[in-house]
Amino acid sequence: WGAGPLHGINTVVTAGPTYEALDPARGFTNRSSGKMGYALAAALANQGAAVTLISGPTALPAPAGVRRIAVTSARQMRDAVWACRGAMDLFVAAAAVADYRPQTVLADKLKKDADTLTVTLVRNPDILAEVAALTPRPFTVGFAAETGDVETKARAKRARKGIDLIVANPIDEAGVGFAGDDNRVILIDKDHAGAWAAAPKTEIARALVREIIKRLPRTASP
Ligand code: PMT
Image (cartoon, rainbow, N blue to C red):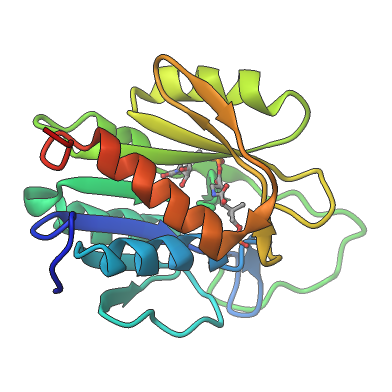
């Protein structure tokens, strides 16, 4: 790992979607491409952090200097994060984790005999909330993918999950949020909320890393 303001900071980043199997052919997932999380992993590594990127299924190559662990489901992502908990100074949760999974994963492919189909879903672990509840806990950054009044919903989410910073992004606006190269974010800590102009995810990632560096207890400027 290189030198830089984050030298010696063990960082875990989650990125991408999760995939929750229903049968051998089908499952539930979402539109996350992993671009935001991968850009953050790269920007953190560029500032010297030791980065473990825990990624759901994406088409992206691992950024240089980053250790990537590939997972599929939310529970696998949770286990991979949990395995890092002993040496985690910074946790950045950019993944779009499925909140629910099918209660039963069918061994055989589901047949389309009926006109309607009911699937029972059960809650997945909330990885971000579990990390935020650790003692001592790493500096914790979450994302909030929201529609409508993004800022109000994200403020409430930050307080509820007990995290240091939340990065809110609208997912009901064209060209930002899921999948594309650009994003528009509102950065919220316990005192302030700042709305940033839409920009490439790579640029937003670099700016977010600067904000993290300012706030990290071990790297705060004297
Ligand atoms: O991957 P891209 O195509 O680049 O898109 C980027 C993005 C829109 C996916 C990303 O910027 C983003 O907003 N990620 C979080 C998406 C999300 O799941 O938001 P949420 O509001 O449902 O979750 C809130 C936070 O809790 C997130 O930090 C999420 O990682 C975390 N979480 C959620 C559920 C869960 N079971 N475990 C979690 O850790």
